Structures are given as structure tokens and as C-alpha cells.
Image 1 (tube, rainbow, N blue to C red):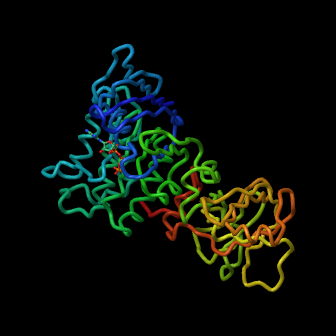
Image 2: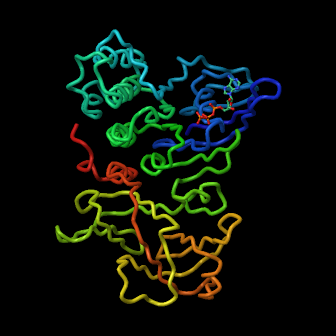
Image 3: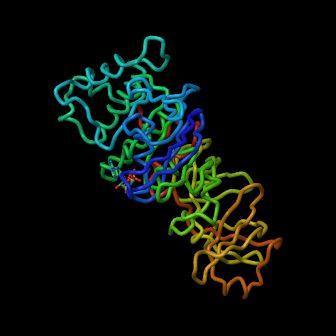
Amino acid sequence: MPQIVLKHRFGRDGFALDVAFDAPETGVTALFGPSGCGKTSVLAAVAGLLRPQEGRIAIGGDVVLDTARRIALAPERRRCAVVFQDARLFPHLSVETNLRYGLRRAPRSAEGPGFDEVVALLGIAHLLGRRPAGLSGGERQRVALGRALLARPRLLLMDEPLAALDAARRAEVLPFLARLRDVARLPILYVTHALDEVDALADHLVLMDRGRVLADGPVAALAARTDLPLAARRDAGVLLDCTVGEAPADALTRLDFPGGALLTILRPGPPGTRLRVRVRARDVAVAVSEPQGLSTRNVLRGTLTDIQPAGEGQEVFVRLAIGPSELLARITRDSVQRLQLHTGMVVWALVKAVTFDHRMGTAATGAAGSGAPDALPAA
Ligand SMILES: Nc1ncnc2c1ncn2[C@@H]1O[C@H](COP(=O)(O)OP(=O)(O)OP(=O)(O)O)[C@@H](O)[C@H]1O
């Protein structure tokens, strides 16, 4: 399991970084936070491109940095592969030669997917003879992912790999990133300031602010907390792991989650497709008796478990247990008083909209380790 402890100050009075976290053995750990909070500096220190004043970094059981013991492995000996915003392919080489460059960097003893497997995984077989200049931004990023994977790293580092792409290209590349995550069986450190990428890809979240880690843990657990800056966002809300249920072809799609189901007009995939869905707190209303004659189809019976202030204003977060799952509703203090809401009472949650971050790609790939390959583009 990657273990990262770092302290560094740029210049005498410059930015100070002071972070410590462990990342799971496999899957995506997202480093998330506002611009300038130190995400890229963490990645650079892990890659060996920044030498921190103090720190200890272990990857796959090997210590690659330990300032107390004067250990600092050179970047090429750390076996980290980095994917940047811009693909940084060799412009004078074909796609195939760029990919084989990755393979040449792989240690002989290292195990990992072969050339053909990676080409199929990323859907780039038809690009092999081309030069990078003739590729779209999304295609270039797919090749960059392939080159990184073929180097058979112990840790993949990604620094906002989708940030330079327009919305359509992001939607194109995101499913391939999810595939890579599921197939590679590697730890991936993924820097982003796009919450929809966190929702779609990450298993673990390291929430950063001003050079420090505010919180880290499973993405869904952090999304449900009301004491973190995530709760101040307009899209604050819980993440539910759902499975598309059986339904007539012309009916709404039913998304089953532990303890309930949601209906949506969106079609994320055939029955059995697993996906992670964000249910925003501001899209959830609360009723104290079962509502009748509503246009809202999603009415879920639950128990009120907590009421917390939502920032400085007149609103609160109401936490609801729906079986083993949770929802958050953002409502006014006035409603709390008027309805005499209190913990332990039975309530009904009215969910206005089920959001997949507006993108089918996100929905279909949001399933961590999902059984939804048919929702992905054909390789
Ligand atoms: N080489 C350097 N010298 C001095 N200050 C630096 C250096 N590199 C980064 N910084 C400062 O450290 C802080 C964190 O930068 P960093 O790039 O790690 O943040 P970030 O969270 O990745 O930001 P963004 O999301 O905008 O890329 C910033 O204030 C930046 O100006």
C-alpha cells in the first residue's frame, strides 16, 4: 500500500506542504482540492521530481524516500509512471513506437498487461501507424495512458489527465480510464479538481486544502459528511452504489440500491449494470407523512438520524437512513420548525432528480469494479 508522508516549504515564506496518507493497494485515490492546495506537489514528490525537506514514501513495500535515512531513489528507479494533462508523446515517433517505448522501460521481471492487451483495452489499434500530431486530444491521452501502463509501474500517477480536453473528449476518455482502473490492479494517484471525475473514478479520496489533508477515506463516506468543504458545494450530496433493475423497455429505469430504488428517465445500461449515482442534497425534500398525488416518483420511507447546519445561512442538512443507505436533504431551518423534525422520526424523502453528473459516460463508468463492460465503448 503506498504510504506518503511529506513536509516541504517552498522558499523561506513560501507555500507549506504537510501531508500524510495511505492509498489503497489497487484502485483510484483522488487528490482533490482547490487550485494551489498542493496536489501536484504531492504527485511530484512521489514521482521523485520534487525533493521534499522531510518525508517518507513507500510504494509496494519498498521505501523510495526516507529523508531521515537519507534515502531518495531517482525517479526512474521508483517505478512510477506519470500521465500529465498534455500527453507528452514523442512527436516524431508513431503511436506504436511511443507505446513500445513504455514497454522498453518495463523491468524484465515486472508483470503486467502485454502490448496487444493494452492496445485493445484503450481502443487504439487503428491509430498505431499514426503520428501524435494527427490524433485528437482524447486519442493522444489514450496513447499516453497506454504508454504509462506498458512501463509496468508499481504506481500510476495522473495529474489532471482530462483537464485539457473539451467536454466531448473528456466523456470519450473517462470510460477508458475506468477500464484501466479495473484491469490494471495498480494503485493510481489521480489529481483533479473536477468532482464528477472523483465520482466516476475514485475509490478513495484525499481532500486537501492549503497544503494539508483535511480528510481521507472512501469517496462515498466523505461525500456524506457535512463537516467538510464538499458540503458547501451546490452539488453536495451522497453517492449511492446502484444496479439497474429489470423493467419494461418503455418504462423508467429502476436503480436499485441497498434499502430502496430510484426511478430515472436516463438509461445507463442494461439490467445488472452497476453505477454510482450522486443524489444532491438540494434535490431532496422531506415529508412527515406519506405524500399523495405528487408528480415526484421517488418517495422513499426512512428515518431521520441527524440535523446539522449547512454553512452560516438559514439552511440545514437533514440526514436520512433509507435501510442501510443514507440520503442528505438540504432544507431551511424554517421547515425543520414547521414540520417539527427531530431525530428518530419516520419521514419520507422526495428525490426530485437523480443525477449522473449529466453524463452517461460518468454514470456507466462510475461503478467501481463494475460488471458493466457493455456500457463502455467497444475496444
Ligand atoms: N517550485 C515552486 N516554487 C515555489 N512555489 C511553488 C513551487 N511549486 C509550487 N509552488 C506553490 O505551491 C502551491 C501548491 O502548488 P500545486 O501546483 O502543488 O497546487 P495544485 O493543488 O496542484 O494546484 P492546481 O490545481 O492549480 O494545479 C502553490 O501556491 C504554488 O504556487
